[in-house]
Image 1 (cartoon, one colour):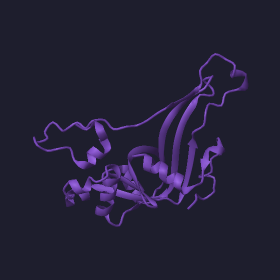
Image 2 (spheres, one colour):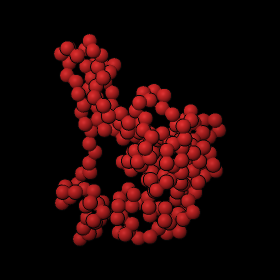
Image 3 (tube, rainbow, N blue to C red):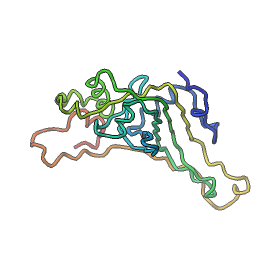
Length: 216
C-alpha cells in the first residue's frame, strides 16, 4: 500500500528524502514508541505525546477516557500523528550544512474506537514490552472503562528519511573543520525494581529480553 499523492502527503522540502515503500513506514512506526498527535479543539490546536503501537494496518493510540484529546479524536476529529526516530548528528564543515539523520512518518486520518478494547490493549502492551501480557493479571472492568484505545488507519501517510553524509559547499572542502556523522543509538539499561517489590520476585523474561546482558 502506498500513500495517496496529495498536498498533505507530498514532501516539498528535500523531496528526494521521501520514501514511498510501505515497509519504510512500518519500520519507522515500529522503531518509535511515542507519537505526537494533533487535534483542534475550539479553534486551538493541540499536539500531545502518547503511547502508540502499529498493529497491522492501523496505529493504536492509548490514553485516558478523561483526555480532551482522546474525546475529540473519538468524536471523529481529523488528526495527524507524527513519529520521529533520531539516528545521528550530521556534522558538516559549516553550521548551515549541519543536520541530523532521522526517520519520520506522518499519518493522516480519523481515529476510531477499537471494536475489542481488551485485545487492542493486549496488542499495545506487548507492542511496547513483548511478552508482558502473559506475565500480568487481566485488566479490570474499571480499568478498561478508564482507558481509551483508538485506531488510526494507515491509509494516508508520508515518510521522510535523512541518512546521507554532510553536503558541504565545495569551497569548504579544503577547510580545517572536521566533518562526518555521529551515530545515535538507543538502548535499555539495567532494570530498577520498584521500592515496594516483594523479595524473591525475579526480573521477568519480557524485561530481560529488552535489558539484555545488563540484567543482574
